[in-house]
Length: 101
Length: 171
Image (cartoon, rainbow over all chains, first blue to last red):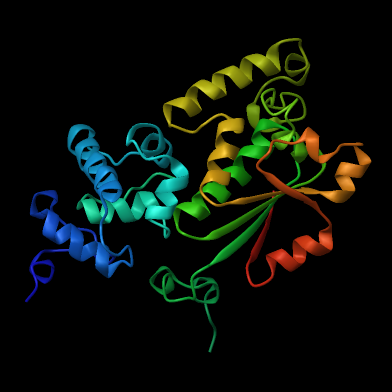
């Protein structure tokens, strides 16, 4: 059994518990969601997501991500083509973002 | 056998089972703040879900991409019963600006960007922006009047071609 199969996840594949996360799981989720191998740019976003969620209790919006993660919006969509906020949250092991923005 | 409305429109448990939306083409036809934002939120929301998004600006909706006007979009305070403001008061000088300012403040709290920034964001996220040819001619505008993110001025026919295979949303 892979480490990912051993942790509790929602129907959409988000981790149930933030504390279950580790970088190896992140790589596995990234591969599974079609993001592929994680580059240092991906990691910048993932680490920012985790840091913000742990500090504030909610995931940052795309706007905030673009302004503060160090990766601009254009690149965010290149790194996570199927939706940066949702995918980066999933890979970062935090709950699915619920905002409309 | 009779079917219930919920069955007809797809009960909640059927959500997700239907084929996902992969493309939306959104028409923005109104020039007031409350006429422009919903389309932008739908377009940005589509890109956030990895859905392809085209935005077609027509009639006064073109103010949203007009360089000279996109920073001055106001809430309509006359003829807008949703505001619950007396009509005579809505027409008073400065009221529209005041209500717009208040709304901008509450949107900033929710991290909703001002219109120029929002449109730039949609373009950066891969959403495509177009102006309506008939409206451009009617208002005697040219490509130079629009922000650089506007890809082109297209006909209704071209819009339909581009929208093929996706959903069209008129706002």
